[in-house]
Image (cartoon, rainbow, N blue to C red):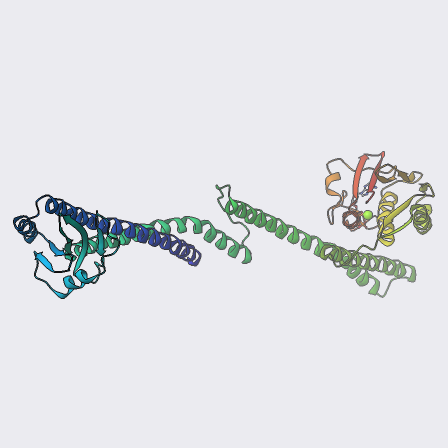
Length: 456
Ligand SMILES: Nc1ncnc2c1ncn2[C@@H]1O[C@H](COP(=O)(O)OP(=O)(O)OP(=O)(O)O)[C@@H](O)[C@H]1O
Ligand SMILES: [Mg+2]
Protein backbone atom coordinates (compact mmCIF):
# COMPACT_ATOMS: atom_id res chain seq x y z
CA UNK A 1 0.00 0.00 0.00
CA UNK A 2 2.63 2.43 1.10
CA UNK A 3 5.30 1.27 -1.28
CA UNK A 4 5.96 4.74 -2.62
CA UNK A 5 6.54 6.21 0.84
CA UNK A 6 8.86 3.32 1.68
CA UNK A 7 10.78 3.94 -1.53
CA UNK A 8 11.05 7.68 -1.02
CA UNK A 9 11.93 7.12 2.63
CA UNK A 10 14.65 4.57 1.96
CA UNK A 11 16.16 6.68 -0.77
CA UNK A 12 16.31 9.76 1.40
CA UNK A 13 17.56 7.78 4.36
CA UNK A 14 20.41 6.22 2.39
CA UNK A 15 21.35 9.61 0.98
CA UNK A 16 21.24 11.55 4.21
CA UNK A 17 22.72 8.73 6.27
CA UNK A 18 25.71 8.31 3.98
CA UNK A 19 26.22 12.08 4.10
CA UNK A 20 26.12 11.93 7.88
CA UNK A 21 28.55 9.04 7.96
CA UNK A 22 31.01 11.00 5.82
CA UNK A 23 30.71 14.09 7.99
CA UNK A 24 31.05 12.09 11.20
CA UNK A 25 34.12 10.34 9.83
CA UNK A 26 35.79 13.61 8.88
CA UNK A 27 34.97 15.16 12.25
CA UNK A 28 36.26 12.09 14.08
CA UNK A 29 39.53 12.16 12.14
CA UNK A 30 39.98 15.84 12.84
CA UNK A 31 39.36 15.53 16.58
CA UNK A 32 41.52 12.41 16.90
CA UNK A 33 44.42 14.03 15.07
CA UNK A 34 44.30 17.22 17.05
CA UNK A 35 44.18 15.25 20.31
CA UNK A 36 47.20 13.19 19.34
CA UNK A 37 49.05 16.24 18.08
CA UNK A 38 48.37 17.92 21.40
CA UNK A 39 49.83 14.95 23.26
CA UNK A 40 52.87 14.81 21.01
CA UNK A 41 53.66 18.51 21.22
CA UNK A 42 53.22 18.41 25.00
CA UNK A 43 55.75 15.61 25.10
CA UNK A 44 58.20 17.56 22.89
CA UNK A 45 57.81 20.62 25.14
CA UNK A 46 58.42 18.51 28.23
CA UNK A 47 61.58 17.12 26.66
CA UNK A 48 62.72 20.64 25.72
CA UNK A 49 62.16 21.84 29.28
CA UNK A 50 64.30 19.01 30.61
CA UNK A 51 66.95 19.89 28.07
CA UNK A 52 66.97 23.53 29.22
CA UNK A 53 67.51 22.43 32.79
CA UNK A 54 70.16 19.94 31.71
CA UNK A 55 72.07 22.52 29.68
CA UNK A 56 72.01 25.03 32.51
CA UNK A 57 73.13 22.69 35.31
CA UNK A 58 74.81 19.72 33.76
CA UNK A 59 75.77 17.44 36.62
CA UNK A 60 74.86 14.07 38.05
CA UNK A 61 72.38 15.57 40.45
CA UNK A 62 70.41 17.32 37.75
CA UNK A 63 70.35 14.15 35.67
CA UNK A 64 69.01 12.09 38.58
CA UNK A 65 66.53 14.78 39.37
CA UNK A 66 65.14 14.75 35.81
CA UNK A 67 64.84 10.96 35.93
CA UNK A 68 63.15 11.18 39.30
CA UNK A 69 60.60 13.64 38.00
CA UNK A 70 59.48 11.13 35.38
CA UNK A 71 59.27 8.11 37.66
CA UNK A 72 55.98 9.27 39.14
CA UNK A 73 54.32 10.25 35.85
CA UNK A 74 53.17 8.18 32.86
CA UNK A 75 56.03 9.62 30.82
CA UNK A 76 59.57 8.34 30.87
CA UNK A 77 62.89 9.99 30.08
CA UNK A 78 66.05 8.42 28.69
CA UNK A 79 69.24 10.44 28.23
CA UNK A 80 72.04 9.11 26.05
CA UNK A 81 75.42 10.56 25.15
CA UNK A 82 76.81 11.04 21.70
CA UNK A 83 78.12 7.52 21.63
CA UNK A 84 74.67 6.15 22.28
CA UNK A 85 75.40 5.01 25.82
CA UNK A 86 72.50 5.44 28.20
CA UNK A 87 73.38 8.01 30.87
CA UNK A 88 70.14 7.59 32.75
CA UNK A 89 66.68 6.14 32.26
CA UNK A 90 63.57 6.56 34.38
CA UNK A 91 62.14 3.36 33.02
CA UNK A 92 63.44 -0.11 32.80
CA UNK A 93 65.03 -0.61 29.41
CA UNK A 94 63.02 -2.85 27.12
CA UNK A 95 63.41 -3.69 23.48
CA UNK A 96 60.86 -1.12 22.37
CA UNK A 97 62.71 1.70 24.08
CA UNK A 98 65.93 0.28 22.72
CA UNK A 99 64.52 0.25 19.21
CA UNK A 100 63.63 3.94 19.45
CA UNK A 101 67.11 4.77 20.78
CA UNK A 102 68.61 2.96 17.81
CA UNK A 103 66.65 4.99 15.27
CA UNK A 104 68.68 7.32 13.07
CA UNK A 105 69.09 10.76 14.63
CA UNK A 106 69.11 12.85 11.50
CA UNK A 107 67.61 16.29 10.93
CA UNK A 108 66.79 16.90 14.53
CA UNK A 109 66.45 20.60 15.24
CA UNK A 110 67.22 22.11 18.58
CA UNK A 111 63.57 22.10 19.47
CA UNK A 112 63.35 18.36 19.12
CA UNK A 113 60.97 16.22 17.11
CA UNK A 114 58.58 13.35 17.32
CA UNK A 115 60.47 10.18 16.56
CA UNK A 116 57.75 7.60 17.10
CA UNK A 117 54.07 8.46 16.82
CA UNK A 118 52.72 4.97 16.33
CA UNK A 119 50.19 5.00 19.16
CA UNK A 120 47.99 2.37 17.65
CA UNK A 121 50.26 -0.66 17.94
CA UNK A 122 53.25 0.56 19.92
CA UNK A 123 53.47 0.78 23.69
CA UNK A 124 54.98 4.28 23.57
CA UNK A 125 55.06 7.44 21.60
CA UNK A 126 58.46 9.06 21.69
CA UNK A 127 60.18 12.41 21.10
CA UNK A 128 63.86 13.35 20.99
CA UNK A 129 65.60 16.61 21.85
CA UNK A 130 69.36 17.12 21.39
CA UNK A 131 71.36 18.86 24.14
CA UNK A 132 74.78 20.44 24.37
CA UNK A 133 76.20 21.28 27.77
CA UNK A 134 79.76 22.32 27.18
CA UNK A 135 81.63 19.25 26.03
CA UNK A 136 78.75 17.00 26.94
CA UNK A 137 76.49 16.32 24.05
CA UNK A 138 73.71 13.86 23.71
CA UNK A 139 70.01 13.24 23.24
CA UNK A 140 67.13 13.40 25.61
CA UNK A 141 64.29 10.99 24.80
CA UNK A 142 60.80 11.30 26.15
CA UNK A 143 58.43 8.33 26.12
CA UNK A 144 54.77 8.33 26.83
CA UNK A 145 52.68 5.27 27.50
CA UNK A 146 50.06 4.97 24.72
CA UNK A 147 47.48 3.49 27.08
CA UNK A 148 46.07 6.92 27.85
CA UNK A 149 45.77 7.89 24.20
CA UNK A 150 44.12 4.58 23.44
CA UNK A 151 41.68 5.18 26.27
CA UNK A 152 41.00 8.66 24.94
CA UNK A 153 40.32 7.33 21.45
CA UNK A 154 38.04 4.63 22.82
CA UNK A 155 36.02 7.28 24.57
CA UNK A 156 35.89 9.44 21.48
CA UNK A 157 34.73 6.47 19.43
CA UNK A 158 32.05 5.65 21.95
CA UNK A 159 30.75 9.22 21.88
CA UNK A 160 30.70 9.20 18.14
CA UNK A 161 28.85 5.90 18.06
CA UNK A 162 26.18 7.18 20.42
CA UNK A 163 25.84 10.43 18.45
CA UNK A 164 25.71 8.42 15.18
CA UNK A 165 22.97 6.11 16.38
CA UNK A 166 20.96 9.03 17.75
CA UNK A 167 21.29 10.95 14.47
CA UNK A 168 20.34 7.92 12.42
CA UNK A 169 17.30 7.42 14.62
CA UNK A 170 16.18 11.05 14.39
CA UNK A 171 16.85 11.09 10.63
CA UNK A 172 14.80 7.93 10.19
CA UNK A 173 11.86 9.39 12.11
CA UNK A 174 11.95 12.71 10.24
CA UNK A 175 12.18 10.95 6.89
CA UNK A 176 9.38 8.60 7.82
CA UNK A 177 7.12 11.56 8.57
CA UNK A 178 8.24 13.51 5.49
CA UNK A 179 7.83 10.61 3.11
CA UNK A 180 4.35 9.99 4.44
CA UNK A 181 3.49 13.63 3.89
CA UNK A 182 4.80 13.42 0.32
CA UNK A 183 3.23 10.07 -0.43
CA UNK A 184 -0.16 10.76 1.11
CA UNK A 185 -1.60 12.79 -1.77
CA UNK A 186 -0.13 10.30 -4.24
CA UNK A 187 -1.83 7.42 -2.48
CA UNK A 188 -5.09 9.37 -2.43
CA UNK A 189 -4.79 10.04 -6.15
CA UNK A 190 -4.06 6.40 -6.80
CA UNK A 191 -7.20 5.44 -4.94
CA UNK A 192 -9.16 8.08 -6.85
CA UNK A 193 -8.00 6.83 -10.24
CA UNK A 194 -8.82 3.30 -9.16
CA UNK A 195 -12.34 4.46 -8.40
CA UNK A 196 -12.45 6.14 -11.79
CA UNK A 197 -11.46 2.91 -13.50
CA UNK A 198 -14.25 1.15 -11.65
CA UNK A 199 -16.75 3.62 -13.06
CA UNK A 200 -17.21 5.77 -10.00
CA UNK A 201 -16.75 9.27 -11.37
CA UNK A 202 -17.81 11.25 -8.32
CA UNK A 203 -14.46 11.56 -6.62
CA UNK A 204 -13.32 14.39 -4.42
CA UNK A 205 -9.65 15.33 -4.20
CA UNK A 206 -8.64 18.21 -2.02
CA UNK A 207 -5.79 20.08 -3.66
CA UNK A 208 -4.54 22.84 -1.50
CA UNK A 209 -0.97 22.75 -2.76
CA UNK A 210 0.32 24.73 -5.70
CA UNK A 211 3.00 22.27 -6.71
CA UNK A 212 3.01 19.52 -9.31
CA UNK A 213 1.08 17.19 -7.02
CA UNK A 214 -1.64 19.81 -6.65
CA UNK A 215 -1.72 20.19 -10.43
CA UNK A 216 -2.02 16.43 -10.84
CA UNK A 217 -4.87 16.31 -8.33
CA UNK A 218 -6.62 19.09 -10.25
CA UNK A 219 -6.16 17.21 -13.53
CA UNK A 220 -7.59 14.04 -12.04
CA UNK A 221 -10.52 15.99 -10.65
CA UNK A 222 -11.10 17.53 -14.07
CA UNK A 223 -10.85 14.12 -15.70
CA UNK A 224 -13.43 12.69 -13.34
CA UNK A 225 -15.93 15.47 -13.99
CA UNK A 226 -15.32 15.16 -17.72
CA UNK A 227 -15.85 11.41 -17.57
CA UNK A 228 -18.96 11.99 -15.53
CA UNK A 229 -20.21 14.40 -18.17
CA UNK A 230 -19.40 11.92 -20.92
CA UNK A 231 -21.20 9.19 -19.08
CA UNK A 232 -24.42 11.20 -18.74
CA UNK A 233 -24.08 12.39 -22.31
CA UNK A 234 -23.68 8.84 -23.53
CA UNK A 235 -26.70 7.72 -21.56
CA UNK A 236 -28.78 10.56 -22.97
CA UNK A 237 -27.51 9.77 -26.44
CA UNK A 238 -28.45 6.12 -26.12
CA UNK A 239 -31.87 7.07 -24.79
CA UNK A 240 -32.39 9.40 -27.77
CA UNK A 241 -31.25 6.77 -30.25
CA UNK A 242 -33.58 4.14 -28.92
CA UNK A 243 -36.38 6.66 -28.93
CA UNK A 244 -35.62 7.72 -32.50
CA UNK A 245 -35.49 4.12 -33.65
CA UNK A 246 -38.63 3.18 -31.85
CA UNK A 247 -40.83 5.90 -33.41
CA UNK A 248 -40.52 4.84 -37.07
CA UNK A 249 -40.58 1.20 -36.05
CA UNK A 250 -43.89 1.76 -34.26
CA UNK A 251 -45.27 3.40 -37.39
CA UNK A 252 -44.05 0.56 -39.57
CA UNK A 253 -45.45 -2.08 -37.27
CA UNK A 254 -48.79 -0.23 -36.86
CA UNK A 255 -49.33 0.41 -40.56
CA UNK A 256 -48.18 -3.09 -41.47
CA UNK A 257 -50.82 -4.49 -39.08
CA UNK A 258 -53.45 -2.29 -40.68
CA UNK A 259 -52.34 -3.15 -44.21
CA UNK A 260 -52.70 -6.84 -43.39
CA UNK A 261 -56.43 -6.53 -42.83
CA UNK A 262 -58.39 -8.26 -45.56
CA UNK A 263 -61.21 -5.78 -46.15
CA UNK A 264 -59.01 -2.89 -47.25
CA UNK A 265 -59.25 -1.43 -50.72
CA UNK A 266 -56.17 -1.39 -52.96
CA UNK A 267 -55.72 2.40 -52.67
CA UNK A 268 -55.87 2.39 -48.90
CA UNK A 269 -53.43 -0.49 -48.68
CA UNK A 270 -51.05 1.31 -51.04
CA UNK A 271 -51.16 4.48 -48.94
CA UNK A 272 -50.23 2.46 -45.86
CA UNK A 273 -47.42 0.75 -47.72
CA UNK A 274 -46.21 4.15 -48.87
CA UNK A 275 -45.98 5.30 -45.25
CA UNK A 276 -44.10 2.13 -44.38
CA UNK A 277 -41.64 2.80 -47.20
CA UNK A 278 -41.19 6.40 -46.04
CA UNK A 279 -40.53 5.36 -42.49
CA UNK A 280 -38.10 2.70 -43.67
CA UNK A 281 -36.24 5.35 -45.68
CA UNK A 282 -36.14 7.53 -42.58
CA UNK A 283 -34.71 4.67 -40.54
CA UNK A 284 -32.08 4.05 -43.18
CA UNK A 285 -31.11 7.73 -43.14
CA UNK A 286 -30.98 7.72 -39.35
CA UNK A 287 -28.74 4.67 -39.24
CA UNK A 288 -26.49 6.13 -41.95
CA UNK A 289 -26.19 9.42 -40.10
CA UNK A 290 -25.45 7.66 -36.82
CA UNK A 291 -22.74 5.63 -38.48
CA UNK A 292 -21.34 8.82 -39.94
CA UNK A 293 -21.26 10.49 -36.53
CA UNK A 294 -19.66 7.45 -34.95
CA UNK A 295 -16.97 7.62 -37.61
CA UNK A 296 -16.48 11.33 -36.99
CA UNK A 297 -16.23 10.65 -33.25
CA UNK A 298 -13.60 7.97 -33.64
CA UNK A 299 -11.55 10.12 -35.99
CA UNK A 300 -11.50 7.12 -38.29
CA UNK A 301 -12.36 9.28 -41.25
CA UNK A 302 -9.90 11.68 -42.73
CA UNK A 303 -10.49 14.95 -44.44
CA UNK A 304 -8.99 14.86 -47.90
CA UNK A 305 -8.39 18.48 -48.70
CA UNK A 306 -7.93 19.81 -52.17
CA UNK A 307 -8.31 23.15 -53.86
CA UNK A 308 -11.48 23.55 -55.92
CA UNK A 309 -13.84 26.21 -57.14
CA UNK A 310 -16.62 27.11 -54.71
CA UNK A 311 -18.78 28.21 -57.62
CA UNK A 312 -18.58 24.80 -59.33
CA UNK A 313 -19.31 22.98 -56.14
CA UNK A 314 -22.34 25.14 -55.36
CA UNK A 315 -23.66 24.65 -58.90
CA UNK A 316 -23.53 20.92 -58.37
CA UNK A 317 -25.37 21.19 -55.06
CA UNK A 318 -28.04 23.46 -56.47
CA UNK A 319 -28.69 21.08 -59.36
CA UNK A 320 -29.20 18.30 -56.87
CA UNK A 321 -31.54 20.29 -54.62
CA UNK A 322 -33.43 22.34 -57.19
CA UNK A 323 -36.27 19.82 -57.70
CA UNK A 324 -37.07 19.65 -53.98
CA UNK A 325 -36.91 23.44 -53.67
CA UNK A 326 -39.22 23.76 -56.67
CA UNK A 327 -41.64 21.36 -55.08
CA UNK A 328 -41.59 23.37 -51.87
CA UNK A 329 -42.02 26.54 -53.95
CA UNK A 330 -38.93 28.14 -52.48
CA UNK A 331 -36.46 30.06 -54.64
CA UNK A 332 -32.85 29.06 -54.32
CA UNK A 333 -30.44 31.89 -55.11
CA UNK A 334 -26.71 31.42 -55.36
CA UNK A 335 -24.49 34.50 -55.28
CA UNK A 336 -20.90 33.45 -55.81
CA UNK A 337 -17.99 34.94 -57.75
CA UNK A 338 -16.63 32.34 -60.13
CA UNK A 339 -13.00 32.80 -59.20
CA UNK A 340 -13.09 31.85 -55.53
CA UNK A 341 -11.02 28.78 -54.71
CA UNK A 342 -11.26 26.88 -51.45
CA UNK A 343 -9.07 24.31 -49.73
CA UNK A 344 -11.40 21.65 -48.36
CA UNK A 345 -12.65 18.11 -48.69
CA UNK A 346 -15.06 18.52 -51.66
CA UNK A 347 -17.42 15.71 -50.60
CA UNK A 348 -17.65 16.99 -47.02
CA UNK A 349 -18.06 20.57 -48.23
CA UNK A 350 -21.05 19.56 -50.30
CA UNK A 351 -22.46 17.66 -47.36
CA UNK A 352 -22.29 20.77 -45.18
CA UNK A 353 -24.04 22.94 -47.76
CA UNK A 354 -26.69 20.29 -48.52
CA UNK A 355 -27.52 19.85 -44.83
CA UNK A 356 -27.89 23.61 -44.29
CA UNK A 357 -29.95 24.08 -47.48
CA UNK A 358 -32.24 21.20 -46.61
CA UNK A 359 -32.92 22.82 -43.25
CA UNK A 360 -33.64 26.14 -44.98
CA UNK A 361 -36.08 24.40 -47.26
CA UNK A 362 -37.69 22.31 -44.50
CA UNK A 363 -38.20 25.20 -42.11
CA UNK A 364 -39.34 27.86 -44.62
CA UNK A 365 -42.83 28.46 -45.97
CA UNK A 366 -43.79 28.64 -49.63
CA UNK A 367 -42.84 31.66 -51.68
CA UNK A 368 -39.71 32.54 -49.70
CA UNK A 369 -36.16 32.90 -50.96
CA UNK A 370 -33.11 31.02 -49.74
CA UNK A 371 -29.81 32.68 -50.61
CA UNK A 372 -26.32 31.23 -50.59
CA UNK A 373 -23.77 34.01 -50.66
CA UNK A 374 -20.04 33.60 -50.93
CA UNK A 375 -17.59 36.44 -50.35
CA UNK A 376 -13.83 36.69 -50.25
CA UNK A 377 -12.26 38.54 -47.35
CA UNK A 378 -8.68 39.30 -46.42
CA UNK A 379 -8.64 36.51 -43.88
CA UNK A 380 -10.50 33.93 -45.89
CA UNK A 381 -13.92 33.09 -47.28
CA UNK A 382 -17.36 33.74 -45.81
CA UNK A 383 -20.24 31.54 -46.89
CA UNK A 384 -23.70 32.44 -45.64
CA UNK A 385 -26.94 30.53 -46.12
CA UNK A 386 -29.91 32.75 -45.47
CA UNK A 387 -33.57 31.71 -45.44
CA UNK A 388 -36.83 33.53 -44.81
CA UNK A 389 -38.26 30.75 -42.73
CA UNK A 390 -39.74 30.42 -39.31
CA UNK A 391 -36.49 31.17 -37.46
CA UNK A 392 -35.02 29.67 -34.31
CA UNK A 393 -35.80 30.98 -30.80
CA UNK A 394 -32.64 32.54 -29.37
CA UNK A 395 -32.72 30.19 -26.37
CA UNK A 396 -32.51 27.23 -28.76
CA UNK A 397 -29.66 28.55 -30.90
CA UNK A 398 -26.87 27.24 -28.61
CA UNK A 399 -28.48 23.78 -28.64
CA UNK A 400 -29.30 23.14 -32.28
CA UNK A 401 -25.90 21.60 -33.00
CA UNK A 402 -26.44 18.93 -30.38
CA UNK A 403 -27.37 15.47 -31.48
CA UNK A 404 -31.11 14.79 -31.74
CA UNK A 405 -31.94 18.35 -30.78
CA UNK A 406 -35.01 19.73 -32.50
CA UNK A 407 -36.74 22.98 -31.70
CA UNK A 408 -40.12 21.49 -32.44
CA UNK A 409 -40.12 18.33 -30.43
CA UNK A 410 -43.65 17.32 -31.29
CA UNK A 411 -42.85 17.26 -34.97
CA UNK A 412 -45.27 15.67 -37.35
CA UNK A 413 -44.38 12.59 -39.29
CA UNK A 414 -44.04 14.57 -42.52
CA UNK A 415 -41.70 17.27 -41.25
CA UNK A 416 -39.73 14.86 -39.11
CA UNK A 417 -35.98 15.24 -39.13
CA UNK A 418 -33.74 13.25 -36.90
CA UNK A 419 -31.97 16.22 -35.34
CA UNK A 420 -28.60 14.91 -36.48
CA UNK A 421 -28.05 17.12 -39.54
CA UNK A 422 -26.51 20.08 -37.74
CA UNK A 423 -24.51 17.81 -35.40
CA UNK A 424 -22.84 16.36 -38.49
CA UNK A 425 -22.34 19.84 -39.95
CA UNK A 426 -20.65 20.95 -36.73
CA UNK A 427 -18.33 17.93 -36.71
CA UNK A 428 -17.34 18.57 -40.32
CA UNK A 429 -16.79 22.29 -39.67
CA UNK A 430 -14.57 21.39 -36.69
CA UNK A 431 -12.67 18.85 -38.73
CA UNK A 432 -11.85 21.63 -41.23
CA UNK A 433 -10.96 24.01 -38.35
CA UNK A 434 -13.59 26.42 -39.55
CA UNK A 435 -16.28 28.27 -37.61
CA UNK A 436 -20.02 28.43 -37.97
CA UNK A 437 -22.28 31.17 -36.63
CA UNK A 438 -26.04 31.38 -36.46
CA UNK A 439 -28.30 34.38 -36.31
CA UNK A 440 -32.04 34.09 -36.47
CA UNK A 441 -35.27 36.02 -36.01
CA UNK A 442 -38.57 34.32 -35.39
CA UNK A 443 -40.76 34.32 -38.52
CA UNK A 444 -38.18 36.35 -40.44
CA UNK A 445 -35.52 33.79 -41.13
CA UNK A 446 -32.17 32.33 -40.12
CA UNK A 447 -28.65 32.83 -41.40
CA UNK A 448 -25.91 30.23 -41.00
CA UNK A 449 -22.46 31.72 -41.67
CA UNK A 450 -19.42 29.54 -42.32
CA UNK A 451 -16.11 31.28 -41.70
CA UNK A 452 -13.26 29.72 -43.66
CA UNK A 453 -9.87 31.01 -42.57
CA UNK A 454 -6.94 30.99 -44.93
CA UNK A 455 -4.40 28.42 -43.92
CA UNK A 456 -0.85 29.46 -44.44
N1 LIG B 1 -32.92 27.09 -41.18
C1 LIG B 1 -33.61 26.79 -40.08
N2 LIG B 1 -34.72 27.45 -39.74
C2 LIG B 1 -35.40 27.14 -38.63
N3 LIG B 1 -35.06 26.16 -37.78
C3 LIG B 1 -33.96 25.45 -38.06
C4 LIG B 1 -33.16 25.73 -39.21
N4 LIG B 1 -32.15 24.85 -39.23
C5 LIG B 1 -32.28 24.09 -38.13
N5 LIG B 1 -33.37 24.43 -37.42
C6 LIG B 1 -33.80 23.83 -36.17
O1 LIG B 1 -32.71 23.11 -35.59
C7 LIG B 1 -33.07 21.76 -35.40
C8 LIG B 1 -31.87 20.88 -35.62
O2 LIG B 1 -31.54 20.84 -37.01
P1 LIG B 1 -30.89 19.54 -37.62
O3 LIG B 1 -30.58 19.81 -39.03
O4 LIG B 1 -29.80 19.15 -36.72
O5 LIG B 1 -32.02 18.46 -37.47
P2 LIG B 1 -33.30 18.18 -38.37
O6 LIG B 1 -33.30 19.07 -39.52
O7 LIG B 1 -34.45 18.24 -37.44
O8 LIG B 1 -33.08 16.69 -38.78
P3 LIG B 1 -32.03 16.13 -39.89
O9 LIG B 1 -31.15 15.25 -39.12
O10 LIG B 1 -32.89 15.38 -40.84
O11 LIG B 1 -31.35 17.28 -40.50
C9 LIG B 1 -34.21 21.51 -36.35
O12 LIG B 1 -35.03 20.50 -35.86
C10 LIG B 1 -34.91 22.83 -36.38
O13 LIG B 1 -35.80 22.92 -35.29
MG1 LIG C 1 -31.61 19.17 -40.80
